[in-house]
Image (cartoon, rainbow over all chains, first blue to last red; front, side, top):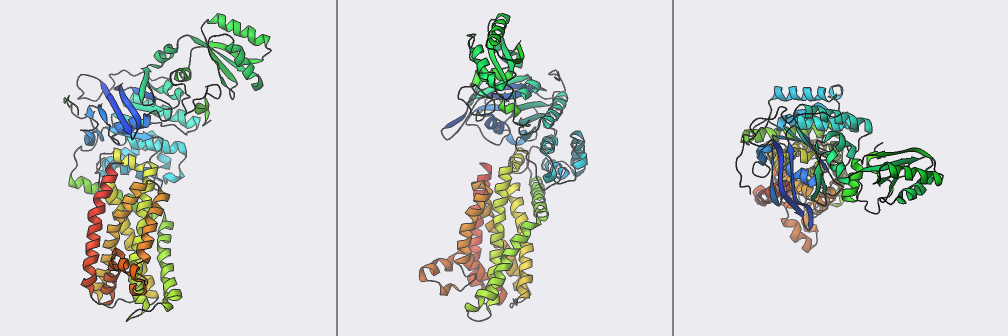
Length: 349
Length: 271
């Protein structure tokens, strides 16, 4: 389900003119001779989710670290919640919450102790931090495990605690760096629900992810970066329209016939098919629409290929990502994108 | 950097954006408490940190001790002040390893993204390690006493000896903090801290009189921080020319703090 929020939802007061909660202008950062970010500009509206997509090493984490004041940019500037990330870094830290792929919670402390420690470091009074810890524990269904050491938590519980810790300060902006990587599908869907609830409550979120499904579901606006540069941005619909048209998508009954099926699709002349042996699927752009589909059906039938599924569909965000970066979302795997293209999305399954 | 300075009121929801000494002290207390909880909840680390010097006491008291002759007094009274210093130094290794581990686990990132005092993580770490040293040194006093060690220069000097051991250990924990922040890897930190430690502790007057070493080694062993500190603590516990050793030990301790506190803080800021 999509949470449809309007930009007007409980927008923090005091913002002048624009309702952009995250404004990045021409940001660059190099590590030695490696250009991690090159002139990156982007904006996130209040109460919305900005999805930052890119393969490993694209610069997502560098951007996140700069916006969270952990790292200083070489040039360009950025404002989060109206505060300059360099000049107002100290004040900014009160306005952001950071949660990430590493689930930065303390193993030896209990869930409650973790949250109260964060509250203390936000300089909340004793009663206030107790109350807020209690509230987020309830909110993230951790109340029952609150007094157990985090060491005994499951992966999903750790991520929930990590997210809960980033909310103790009640920040208007949340920065989530691959919040669901490494989680099982159920924990992931569960965490998505929590994130959607936060957005419904008016929080602005910058979300980096390698899971296109996650961006598709959560993000109102997607920015694709690759090798430190913004290469595309828009809503999921706009990005899919960039590829245009429809694709033929089929599923063979016998995995051994997948390559033959792909060869038939290639014979349509509309482009290079992509295959996924595990799902036994192959896809190819279909410029001729229904005509291409009929031609494919005939060709497949002539070749004696047994099918479980055959149809036309709109391109997925996966297809967009492939077209833009020539890579799977999950890693540096440039050689011809022919097989196993959804490895990343399934690795946890 | 930015020319557009239409700074709107910060919409921060919690805390105060400006740091005051009172807030910084609160942050240091919070981090110290967190690290103390770590020590209490992983008692095996404390046990091993204590077991090692106990083994050294037994080894040198009963195995090597008979072969080592010291001028005036018994070997056990010579040995235990060296054990005190060794205990706080080897224990300080945990500072390097603990910080490197926090870095790897991303806890430090979380701390650095919070509106807390920048100094608190390092101060809290070194203070918690000081508290741990208090426990292990007290244990060494008990173990030493059990195998025949006695303070012979009066209770005030005995207290001064122990305080000085702890002060020296505290200064060294900033060296370990720097090593932990530079290596960023618990295993590497352990190695990087362990090697120089070994050299400093064994090429010193901690276990054997420096006069028994070859001349070139004596040149080093006579002036290095562990030797002068062990000799100062020995004089404080057994009587003798205390100030003769204390001044160089004080100089080393102060010098280590002057060099390594800013170095560690700078490294922390640049993470």
